[in-house]
Length: 408
Image 1 (spheres, one colour):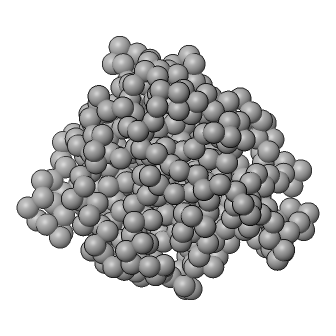
Image 2 (tube, rainbow, N blue to C red):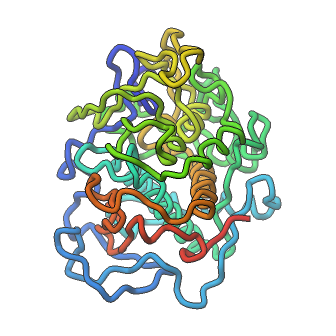
């Protein structure tokens, strides 16, 4: 599996990075013919203000504003550890149903695979919609809410649970049981997941990173097997991120210090010195520090190839350098198409929960208001939502309750 995508950062010997190539929007799976894009509002209210053609609206329709319908009940997102056996079964069945259900937005794809495609294409250099910049948390918040509404379209009783990896932080945690996400990869089966409802043969991967030469049709995991992510993040590390009062700072990229940016700190980039764009590999930061919090969870679940130029953090010269030779283990959660592993949603629900804690403490002090990358400014209409008739900007994501849910 030596050619599978790595997780965040720049890999050894110039291997493909986690930044999958899109080669610009024209090459994206989202840049489809207008006939292949349809509208699906779900439980969201209609917004009267039209979006310009430049924002990608099909047929001049008015967009749906990202807000629950009046009178809709407030959904409660539970910890995975608090789910009843029936809730676990219902959630799994809803996920499996989305894998079969035709997409309302993309011809020829399932609902589930459309979400995978969006996440993959969001790394393209011409878009960079949801990573390595201020919109990281707002963009994923909207993605999760759309996904949750699709789950509820299948089963109205289902809500999206979250995996608190600061508490449930081992291979025996409730998230890895055979009735839920299944367990670790099997070394005898190429590290394929062979247990649970998403096991090899029962769950087939359809969407791959553009430069993925292997294209394994099954989930690959190596829980805690890599040298960059031997342990999951701690509550103390999360608290240190939450203490940062500034949401983000110039240059609005991976090059900002994690000490100055809550977004950068939680996303997990450390001591990045350069960003480059390759027409196949996409956007790639060169980072000399550790991979923490959000990024580290992806790495811990996946197993990883060790990256070049890893060493002590500039902020903490005593930090243990990551200099072990590269391994060939590169799991599904390390790719741009990481939602192919359904644990992705549980991880990002926890990131979303932490984002709300920060907002509750510090207020909606989002930066940048303007002057940042396209799609990352306060009132920018975010891609790809503006291509499916949904008005969603970072400014609309400051309250889970305003978006129809809360965290227990």
